[in-house]
Length: 232
Image 1 (cartoon, rainbow, N blue to C red):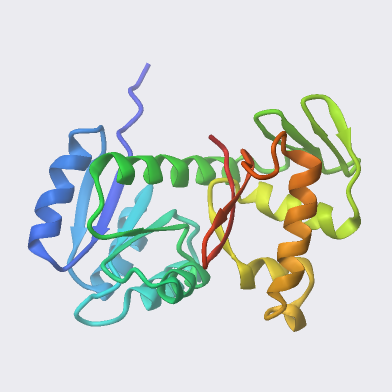
Image 2: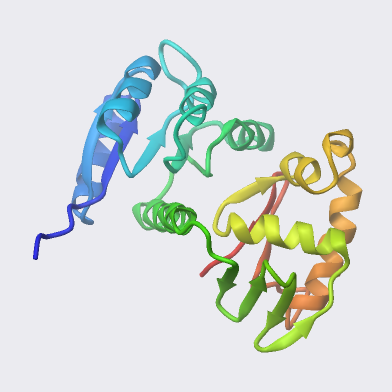
């Protein structure tokens, strides 16, 4: 029986010191690594080498990393994990809205990076399972055909908006979804700035789904950025 090849990670990073840090850290945990030092080279490597995950720096010499993410997202769903010294919420939101799956601010530890990589790859593998009529995340089960939600076997009655919000988060479990993304997907383009709607409905969902709404296990807040459905 042939061995499954190690996952291939493309590092798009122009700083030699960061590449010297990342390569042994990734190789030591079972990843193959290829590198690109510019945005153009990175886009080309995604197209020709079809990596399993992309680590993307935003400060590249030829183009902003957000533009790289937008170009890749025109034709690929490869997980993109941004690694950047830019730590402002606005930068995180812009990167996620450009198509990144997650965002890690420099400096970061190897365990933190590996955990984020595992989450992003798990989300990608879930997307590959097409045609499933159910979304299952631990004790939470969403039957898409019957529009029925249960937690630990207990039926949960949701309003149409609560249901749309929950399914959008569950379809993207492990991925940070920005306020703007959720508002557009659930309410429509005209509601992109109405973040108070989101706060109200997230609070309602937590009361219905979580054992302790003040300490949620499923519906996590990413402060200043958005929300994430935890799949851990």
